[in-house]
Image 1 (spheres, rainbow, N blue to C red):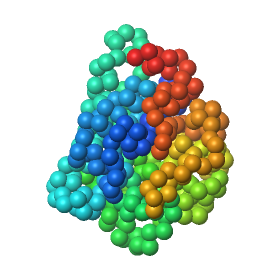
Image 2 (image 1 turned 90 degrees about the horizontal axis):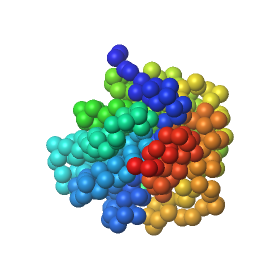
Image 3 (image 1 turned 135 degrees about the vertical axis):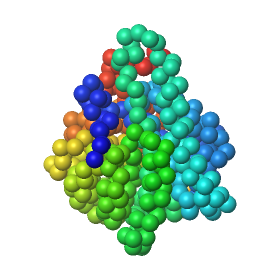
Length: 326
């Protein structure tokens, strides 16, 4: 095993890693049409420059990691659009390259002064979205797949291998709603140990993942994996995050991941975000998340580059001010 932990330089220097924010919902706010089952992956076909530009905006805002536009991408999903297997693989790998190109562009914009030392070269994480994202029926918030472990493994494996060929720095196995899918992914990841991963779960309350199973049971599984270097939650209401993180900290000493959504709820039949209880900005919660053990902190659906800029300013004041001037 030749795995190197790409998070360690950030943790040693900053104590925390700033993640990016929403991709699909931010692209929609900029005028992109994401109707249809492919969601943000649709723009890999129609407007890849928009994805590259958004990655760059997140890096400029202060993100240390960009997550690729493959959450909704799969061979089966692209096939429904009439694409061949080769075309589908090419688009998935393009998604990683777009983030890599945005990172290179960002690094070129940094002045060759001491300020450059304040920004470690950012990372690119390939998004390994859950099976429910492909179904496009809200299953990532229920976890009621009704398929076997073998079928789930066979669905994940080709996409995982395709993404790894694009050489991301790490994998973001995200919005996992159930223990079954976590078990399948952890088992698969043992076959590809050269590239580390994080596992983050969608949660429906302060104790449970979306399926109703215990969050701590999912964290225990991730904690036991040599390939998983961080675990936690994403696309979860901000108000649930702190107690979830505190329970996870009792299970593992690995860095915890926390990138909640804005607090709104996705209504799949109408394909709309429904306002939930009033939520404070991410920045108001972030210090408590860090105190509870979160070391990778960012935003998910309905967050934006401005949220990430504010997050960096709150958690890394000196470095955040330098980023905000660029």
